[in-house]
Image (tube, rainbow, N blue to C red):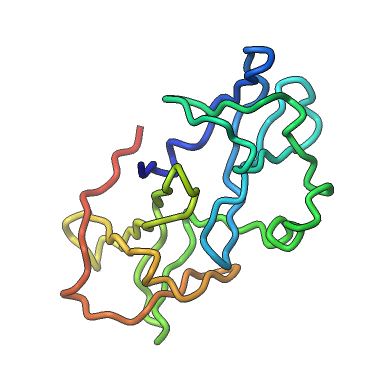
Length: 174
């Protein structure tokens, strides 16, 4: 099932062993090479001074409004995750990142993205355009296949004809 990225923030993480809430998700850890959410930065409810990461492979079950894990021990310090050190160092955040085409035409900014909750791969990005470009207030929906590269400043997508774009209604802010 696809989930909006906004729905993945501030989710409780529950321990199956103790049955209590152990942490809250803060933001996803995104691998820009394959558009996969490798884990989530979390706020540990027992030790609020340290940053921890919950790897997606350690999520046992996705609940209606939270994640279930085996125990508190699955939370890792970023320095312990050597395999993901480059991804952690890059610190990619998609929302509000400028979207441009390969030919350097500005499209807009990422306002949201959807994630497959089984594989944790990002499937679509929603791009909001300026009011001058788009008078309807709609967002563009770009499939992951259209993304060429994600850099520190930009999401670079394939060139396309303006008529071929999928348009979605604007996302309501709460």
